[in-house]
Image (cartoon, rainbow, N blue to C red; front, side, top):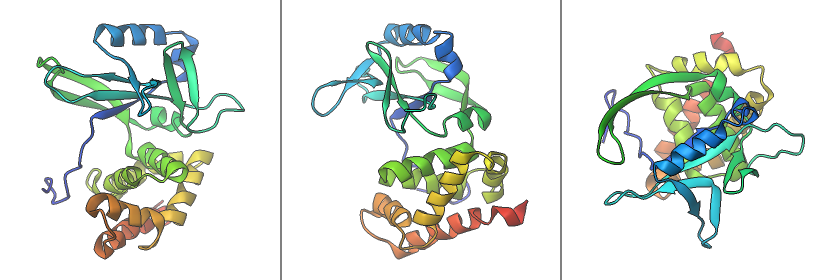
Length: 233
């Protein structure tokens, strides 16, 4: 399938990443968050070993697929490391996520219209991560875990957001002084700037389950263009 400008439609997801600000924790407002989630029928998910995953909650509506929410939080302590778990309550935790503070700086308010998990028609406005912060977060995530889906999501936004690559750059440029942005750019150069690099290859692996020269060339081409941001400022 193709979207309105001819691009491929995103494969979609049943998982939601919910970023928690440190201010939310300082005010202990997370207790209100977890209470509302429990009233809606959410609870901790379990991993493949059957153990609870307090950083990921789930709901399984009757007749619908399971949906999950992953809670993520910026580092705040010297010993914090990306991917580690911060326990907030006995059954509530969040994954420490470097660069997440940028999502509160580069964000967009969007309208969602559709049906709730109970089949009710509803419309709501919510804040979502902007394209600049999204590129940083996905690059950092790929640098840590090397997931094919992270590589695909990163490429999809660079290729398809807004009216063109300039719209991504407009959001990314204000984030350039941040050390997490600079690390993300290094990862893009290292893993995505040539067709045979691991990031370019893993986009193709996600899309086609095998290498694909055309896809890998497209990925590296878009990333190289993004990395020429200094010529556009």
